[in-house]
Amino acid sequence: MEKIPFYDLLTILLPGALLTLAIQLFAVEIGFSISDIEMNQYFSLTVFLSATIFLGSFLNFLTQIILPFLRMIGLFTPLEKLYARMKKVSNMSDFYENMMNEIISDTGEEFTYHEKLEGVWIQIYYYLEVNQKIASPKSFQSFYFFFRNFFTMCLILIFPFVILSFTSMHSKDYLLLSVIDLVAIFLSIIAGSWNRKKMVERIFWSYYSLKSNS
Picture (cartoon, rainbow, N blue to C red):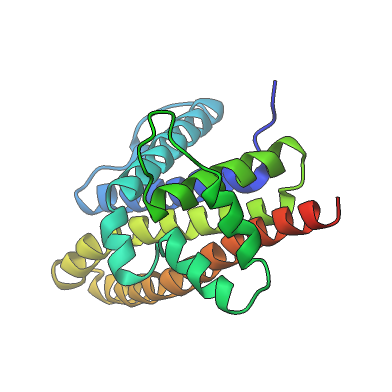
């Protein structure tokens, strides 16, 4: 059975774990605590891990839904924009333009530039993956997915944090958490955008280098 990479697990587990802990914190605020329920240590750990995986997967699904919003704020830069920037500073433009020109429809229908670029992207991504030359790009990709999911989690948490900073008896603590959450949102956008850019660069350059030296 194929092993799940450690970085890929982090993109689901860490945001999911943080959201699970936050939900436990909110539960205490309304007078309910998991610790009030009698359960052994192993069962408690199982419940926590199950909730972590479920909520982490939910965050990943929700992030996919809000991609148009992520594009607006710069956390999801379209592939064609990143490729256009790379063409200005690289000598591989002709190489990939030739690849795009080779992509034709079985029905004779003309593809758009975006569709051709997506076709090239899929081709080179799976070529690198099959030939096990994708470790470095995948590291950037995993960190990008992590910061993307982390952003979604922070976006969800900011509303209850702000409300509780006015209504809770621990208002100062929640005010501090609100500030930390806002900073985390801002940093997630910067870090996520940078990792996506590096991931795309590494994919294109890795394939180009392999083909140029073969």
